[in-house]
Image (cartoon, rainbow over all chains, first blue to last red; front, side, top):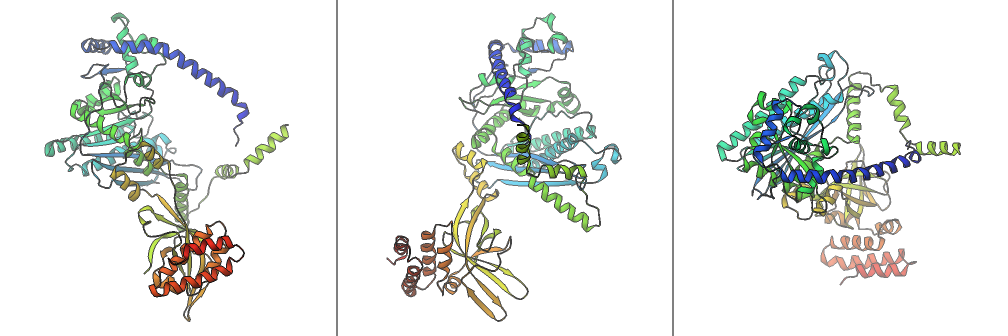
Length: 419
Length: 202
């Protein structure tokens, strides 16, 4: 243990006091926001304000209502009797310059749950090992080693591709299908990522392919296939920004003002909706206004703009508001929205707050430290068999030795010497 | 006939731990005789043990599911059939059978070496139990073992050995076992009385 807690205690105490002050401060501003939301029931006026801010290109990044009043709330709907819930998740081992060999690994897992049936759920795992220079290095295999963010981006595309594949395989089940991804559906890939253009195209291509599954299911047995991005923890302020926009006079609708949260600074949608939504209730379906989402609509198609709603999957004593993202083909179908709403609650009921299928997919995907160690051992053995040099960097050896133990003793010795 | 219940996870000469999957714990019972065999070029070593503990560890997800209440059949099946919920069976070595090309020999002492990781572990069949419990010195190893519920384990294993015999031989076996126990537990009459109560024919 090298963290010297005696030097931290005072900072932790200050942090606690700051947090309490902030909460108190928020509650005053929050009351105002709650009142504003309560009054935001003129859909036409809201749409007019959104049009105005778009027209003035004022950098608005808030929510826009879709077909429901911003302040509307929807109770837990009837859950479909049967449904197929497919969740995917992934994890990775990042390339390690100091390791014995240079590689990275992604492990993509899917979990298929047959809602309403006693059928045994399916679990599937696909590990992928990448070791060629073209995979590991920038600039077509001749540059520096790729960053971890590149691995994350590639893994995200593998996840959605796997989701599409399993949705396609299960399209014959005569029941609604929802495909769950852990995280936002509106994917923010950095432009600094190698192959970002291709990855983004693949990602959107997968969305289109999922929609094809939906169309096929509608044609054959009249059920929906909905893809869902489940955001458990978020600090989004889309509705807060909308409320700020609504309180502005038309002449104030300009970039310098719209880009701030005005009197609602520090408030989040989570704060707001955890006070508005009762357990099991969802908010109105809304659309996030951003150039990226606009590009989903204009470049990929009307069905692929991403909408969202908030959902309280908690209880009266402990509300927990999650953001649920769905593409437009789901958002514009009240039946599909109800299916997503009901099935997510049914999934969360199983574990007490987080979809069971996502919990299991995460469990299947995660690569533990011990598994990483075993993987490295297997790779090293194979390299040795092929007369390759297996050598950990001196830095890594040093780290390993320093972290191997006896630090408590060292630390005690050090503090003893100080005394 | 031997019924495989799992494989060796870790072992020492005193005993071993066998890992199994939760759907497969219908058969093994506390006090049951199990065996695991290690083969070498010129001999075969079958370690015989008795089950001293069957343990199912929880994990955070199980705890969460219990707290959440209502349990769907598909979740139960997923947890029991898909998830690797580890069941660990602790086994105390009570002897071994050493087999060479010249024949087999039963020895009621700790084996010369432990079984290896992943060696299959099987429940002993009635014939194997009868063969191994021809002599009663296996109870000495149970009496001398620390950290096991000795009285219950003695009673369970003696009853198991009796039940492996034909009905007409069971009484005689139990009387013989009682006498052996009386010798071994002569210094602890309360314990002896307790064990004899548990094995006495009704």
